Image (cartoon, rainbow, N blue to C red; front, side, top):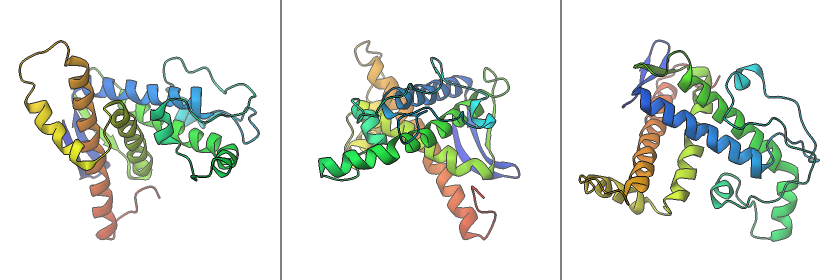
Length: 219
């Protein structure tokens, strides 16, 4: 993987085909989690809302079942989803009321960004090596989607501090000898670091554009 750099058509990174497929699957998995536990696909009253726009539905995550049924939206059970949709207040009553009015809409926005990211990753021939180009007008949405994937992976790895994140590089380097028991964690660590490099380099290029007076990403 090569981090994002600026190009004439947007921001460009180099990804291996396997990296594209893994990231697309993870984005789809997180979108599904938000549908199942975050109330994505429901309006403020818990009822179904309209479909996402065509750009967000050209590719949908595996198992996507469309709008959720008419029902109240509870707080997410999965702590990873709680990281994406945290309590707005330490007061339980205030937090519940805030969720009632905002959680479904916020989950919908996140799902739309995640589906867009997955669609872009598998667009064309994902099994062949090709630059991953993010147009400037969708860069903010892609960066936000990468952040959400990274937050879920951080929870699965039980990461709470920047120091724990930095230690992952040493942990990965120390696992040169294959270990079946360490395999699943090593995979999560590798994808977490990959996602972080992509997200951080994309944001840095966006900030460079802003500082230089270029096109504002997302506009």
